[in-house]
Length: 357
Ligand SMILES: *Cc1c(COP(=O)(O)O)cnc(C)c1O
Image (tube, rainbow, N blue to C red; front, side, top):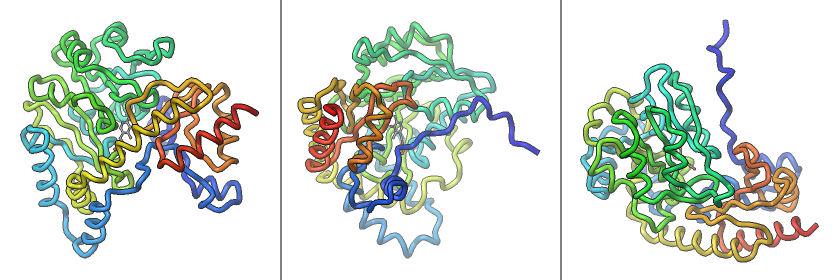
């Protein structure tokens, strides 16, 4: 007895945790700064954390009402109908729902290369096929409609990441519109805005309100600091509303996550501080790292360091954990998450010493 043929499937490569690295090196976790997973430098929204504690005594309830409350709040904030907000177990869970709702066996999806690996993973789970469009380093990883449309071959879903992970670049809404206009009627353009709070550009949800072929992904994992709770959502075209009840895993957005998410949405102080600190850190890293730093609109920067594996390893021994981008196909780049002022300065100083040695 064997599982199905999984030879085309790849493992998700997560950024490494402090405990894991500290154990490996036989050192104390407090000696490390982790800037490898684009997590929030200030931790969870304090209002969200309060809600988590207060929800403990209600944990025997299914989250039906809380799910409805959070969806209503998000729909109100984005000026869409409640049914257009597909709440899920993280942004990744929302990607699963979009795949379930669209893909017939052998349907294709078009994904960026380099890019976020879960787009292709979920497509393969749902018996779809995966093609890529290049995000070219020569252009400073600029994200253009032409690069996508040149590679497009009638795929059922086209994934656009904006801001893009790992480069930090972004698509203009005009580019998204052009792609949606030029692709077939049954092609869904999914704009992944996991880092949407960190950019001053308007959300593609503006387009979801006007069109039937664009969906947007958002998450509570980054700016709201709730990655461990697994809460995210897609905003889908109005005509798609009904499909949610047929594709969602019941109660996948859990009670604690729903209550914390709702509270975090009111925590403007936390989000503002997070976004302002990320802006400062991007600028600081760009100005002070002695290597090419690509322009970023997220809470991280991509840096061309030469031998990424060696540099990441040397930094780890110096107590700074960053993301070696070899698994993205960029074996000469590392991705550094924006930390607090102190963490960011430490990372830059250590990196410059490694680059200089
Ligand atoms: C972090 C991230 C997501 C969503 O992550 P979840 O924790 O599952 O919400 C989606 N897309 C990109 C590009 C990301 O970096």
